[in-house]
Image 1 (cartoon, rainbow, N blue to C red):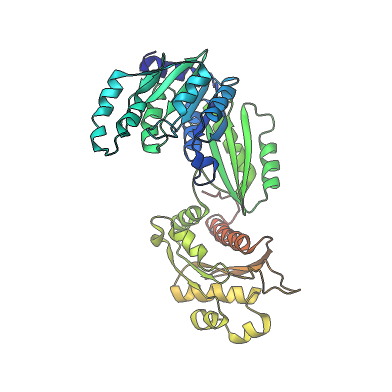
Image 2: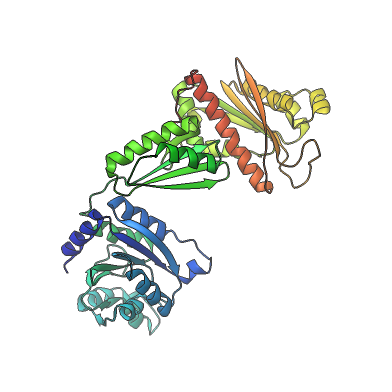
Length: 430
């Protein structure tokens, strides 16, 4: 097949929402030395083109393992994309594995070999040239994808009605070839990710399922991380309009727990709402040690809204920097509603912010008591006209408590900002 014919065939598979698999090759992936980034990236691109990816796997640089994975994927997938193992070193055996799995021979491509000879002069070892030229070995009948970067060409070969695509492992070399293959595929947003805070994974699932009741062609996935839950909706025959209709229904069901779509972070949502409201923010932190401020300042342009924060870990710092009454700390303790409220009020006034949040708690593993066990965290939000506080009891280790406290503080800020923009409660997270 010509490259144009391959592009056309991939587009046909995408229109049919054909099943696809991604196999990432590399012992560094299976041994835990590096995380696989190619697999998810390729899968997202294929899904956006209309293909249905239901397998991402990693295999070591082993000819038998790669051949077995490829043979297995061919039993139920119309498109298999393999990344990695096409270079010049001893462990680049993907070509050999594909030849074994597909019962094909490898042949040296004179044109590729000629191009490779131009780069062999920079190698000093006597055996280097032969190894570099291994990259010119092409599966019989394969379509060659000429590299725009790097030296390893990609290959596409038909296996019955299926296509097997071999791409280089380095992302900068892989991406141009993948984009070429998807040139004719109709790109559309086949996945919607709706992000939420403040609800449990089960609560989110039940709300979304009710919202999708009677809707067909939508696949639902619920992904939870500490204190955050993502709702992933995939178009499985609903059409782009159907996907958008489903997303709209889900947003309504989630209410103010929904804070945005796609890759937006909770901190970004907070800053966006505050900016829209013309309000500035400050934070006072104890047990979170500055992680709320760090999350906010990770967002480019945060300085337009975020004025600053204070990490007041010791009681003396709470008093000297934020004006918290030492007598209050002595009688009620630093982990209490009055202390959190005084911290929020103090940092708001000192920095001249419109709204401020405060966090004070016991992250552990020590420091807890019967009245205030490890995981007890008080939060407060203060503005010019009101100050509120609430307590949460988190489970898990020190890192888990601090992570959940950080997310909760950001979400309480967001919810307070939403209420100020829409006191009726009809506002949304964006």
